[in-house]
Length: 384
Image 1 (cartoon, rainbow, N blue to C red):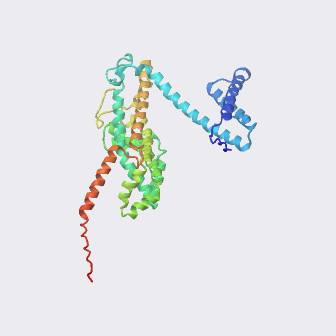
Image 2 (cartoon, one colour):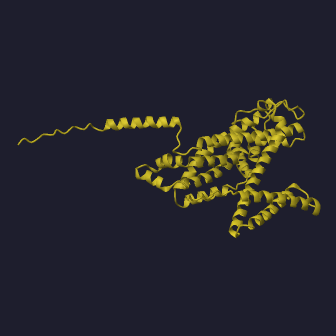
Image 3 (cartoon, rainbow, N blue to C red):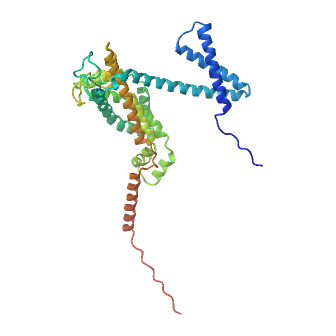
């Protein structure tokens, strides 16, 4: 007689039914308390009470046919999944609210190709746009990445590979800088670059301030990723005669490439939404300024901040449309970073496989040229 298969699935039908029943009962109980028994109001309070009642009822339902450890396991699983759903719902609400408020401006094609140089607060949404802020954000975050990616990766490799008191001091400073307020970074660049070095407000000054915010996040995340590279890979490379530089360049960095891409994403997410450092260092400009080294230049977060303060509904719609455009830009940058660093070191594209095959053929030809031809040994028979 064949042995029956055991169900190894973590999600069971009775758990799903218990969760649905507890959710419906908790909703009814919370509605009874809020609207008929106690004088409570507010959507947030209703959701909190609903979730607490759901946990209690779900634990009671599971306890009817399970023991104590199973009840705790199911309860913790429900709490974790509930928090994940709550965070996802908050994200969807923020993105949806921003797009809905800015939809009136987003539907006009001029919003993506025009600036606000000749647009006033009373002009309709069919005039003006946010292309000047988009260009400013792209140039500022691009310059900041050009500065922070090389310096951040070099600092992370230094912290991961070197030992001694100085790397520990640098790591402590980096961890302390992760909590640096953005206004302090803006004031630092304003005092050093604009006041002491007599630079003017420009996109370059804003990119320096953004880079100060991005650098510690990027270094800390990359340091953690590089320390997770298996030690036997580095030892094998050093045993084959490679230097520490070649080991870091050809072994450590390719192995940690997906994690390093994540570090760049975290740093970019921290810097692209900054407003106060840009306000102090870049100034404000309603027209297009593609020169990041001269004259004030606005970014998407700063344009959103300035437009939302207007009492005119058209300007507020433009502000929310600019915020939605910033969300789309962040999503695009994240997708590009994932495409660049999402593959592992062993996952090669077709072009990389062809290049590696050509390099192997060249190495084989070089080895054959270096190896002298073997002379056949004449075999003579001894005649008795």
